[in-house]
View 1 (tube, each protein chain N blue to C red):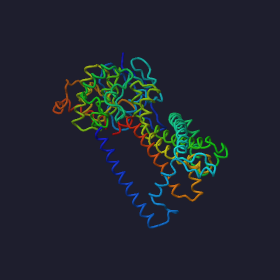
View 2 (view 1 turned 120 degrees about the vertical axis):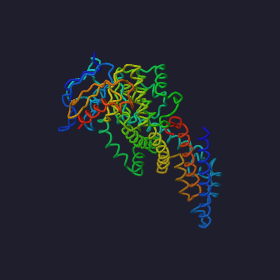
View 3 (view 1 turned 90 degrees about the horizontal axis):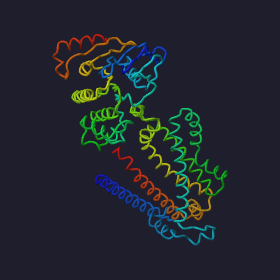
View 4 (view 1 turned 90 degrees about the vertical axis):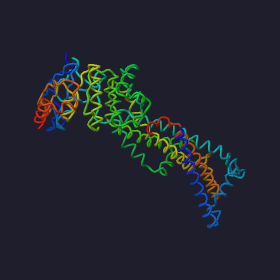
Length: 237
Length: 265
């Protein structure tokens, strides 16, 4: 069974503004899919539809075989903006989800490197740490699928690299399906085992990424990776 | 903990300096004016406070049964506090509900804004005509004011919560009620506390103003009587006493709500 089956997905905000038109896509379980595309081409719109936060104008989305009819705990989402409640301490934030258990909360706080900061308020954390809280909260809630909407776009390079490692470790540990939206080609090549380029309403390219992990900085010197980067940049034009 | 104690001590020190400066300036202006009947100095007002605190038998001839400060303060503050509690509670519920229901907002907003903009000097006599000179008219007037002000602020606070905060909670599996408890209420709490403090201070002042217009008891009634007698020192003593009690009540609210606002730093 696929994590997602998307058929004929169309979203029209108003006449003339149709970011997604008749889009078809299957996402197998356990896959790390990166959705790449220029700004305003429907990446976030697609993710919001997958989360159930936006009702499509036309089309059907099935998650684990069931139609998506609204947001629920089976599809966790990490947002681009700071979305964690500022009035909950780190531990309470990670335990916010309806499915989370004490063991999972403690485990994922450790896994994202926030051990010892459980009693801190979000205002006492850096931007990267707040992202770690959101990631821990989503994983602790044990969703089937994780949706990540340009979660690291506002962070510096070093922090982003550290968070890539954290997300990949958690993905390998839990085997969850991840749909990760980004406009950064290098980020997509580092993280994904499949890259889909969205634009002009539909899927413009669908590329498997088979480089061995861990990838990181090694890929900068790799000829195949550079060829892929060039091809992706060409597709984005 | 020690940091907050230090901050309170620092604020207290500056507050004491402010009071001292004001006292000296007032004393100086009163001295140079030289007319106690028009602008009595602070020592004269203090003397009036001490001698009037437990009542003035002379006022009994004017039909004032209770002329002491404690009974009148208790009456004024008790009525204002009950009205504040009722009006604010209803305002919070209505404001937060309206923020989540567009149709309710459409229905209530014009009415609230129109009636909320009616000056108290117009509204107070109307309430006295409709509900009599007893406590009910003042209670309803203050409760209505608190309802409008607290309701409008609670609604606006809930509407200003970033949509991603609630969407994030929804993707963590929280249903509408859980999201309200975990996201909407705590996010709206700081502005609601601010307006509750404002509503209490203004509610007390409204209560006193309504008592000035017509009442058998209360600080406002005493102020009216003392003003008719031309006793400016007594009027100032009563007004300052109300202000000080309102300040103490505000400190109580701040202390009571501080634990819930600690996350703001």
